Length: 477
Image (tube, rainbow, N blue to C red; front, side, top):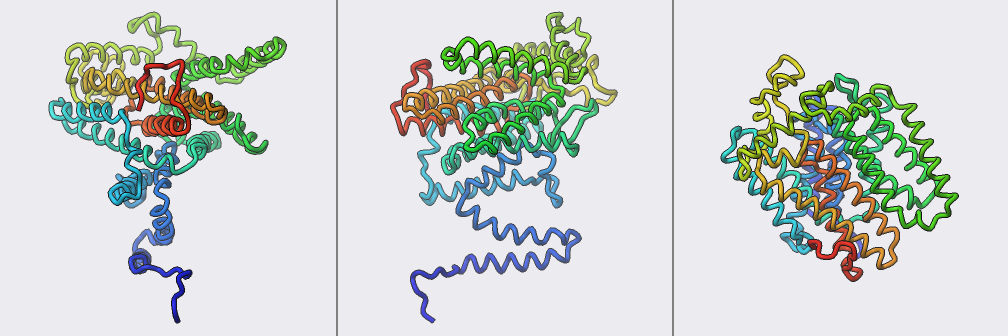
């Protein structure tokens, strides 16, 4: 029977792939975990799909960020869904770049010089580290995070920007809702961890998702969509309170202040009666939130006033530890300001300080090793001032990129895109603020939004004159 040009034929490589897949599926039924055999059939469907749409690999990485404890695969304690998706994305993107199927110009950004400096000082610091094995592992994690940045530059433009925002927001909202329903993790202090291992990390995801939800709510295409987003925002706020994170309270208040400052032009056009009504409503909401908040959380927040007493006068041991991290970090930076002690070695330095025993959480030796809970301070200690400068410069780049993109879209009259740049910039800013209270230079959300800022600015400059009246002279990609 002749084959007409309009008919599609299955190529030999795909026939071979299907045959190998069928044999593997049949062989897996003889294993103790035979019930996972159908997963191979699912993989057989996913592989061709991912081959055609590699952006799905980055989507999986982004969606899995809030589900850290659920990613582990049963046949390997080192392999996770996120790692599998990331590895597949790197292979597919590398293949497309080498064969000319992807535009290499998407990778062009001046931020690579700063990233090269950051990775370089990590590699050099690992050689002269006081704990080489710890430094190598720390550097490896940073390389993985930078890979997310590279994937983002190439793959983010392949999907509408709103889809990425929806994936980031609803994945975190889902963990918040599920943690409130019961299956989420909790630590010894009954703090809500979601599906993560650190309450403050969970709180960072919750708070930085709020601006994304506000954007989706403001630009909701349908009332039902807006209602779902509004309910999700309520889940985020309740889960934030249950995390008992004082860091979340501080960053959230700053975030509200920045958001209100961005609304100042709309407020000026509002009548005085509407402003008064909005102010009264906001006051009622604040009083209601204080009334329904757990007493323990209110006490934790009010204990922040003790910081003015210094390290020695703190009754709250948690705040005392936070202050001691700063003392040890500044002293270590003064001793080795250029090269640092080696990536990931701050806990070793802290264990040698007199604060380690005084603020020990238990009698075990592991409780003496504490991280700085401050990414910028930790970088100064571990890789020196050059590494810390490179990271801070990346934060500035990302912030300026979002601001410039917003200015261009406003100039072009694209209100929704300007709002997208503004709210994503607020999310990125909240992450940067949280890094003063978390030790996470390899945070995937940070590197994803850093790539997102470059993609947004590149798209804006492609469609309009690159003007930014309130940040002239800022570095450009």
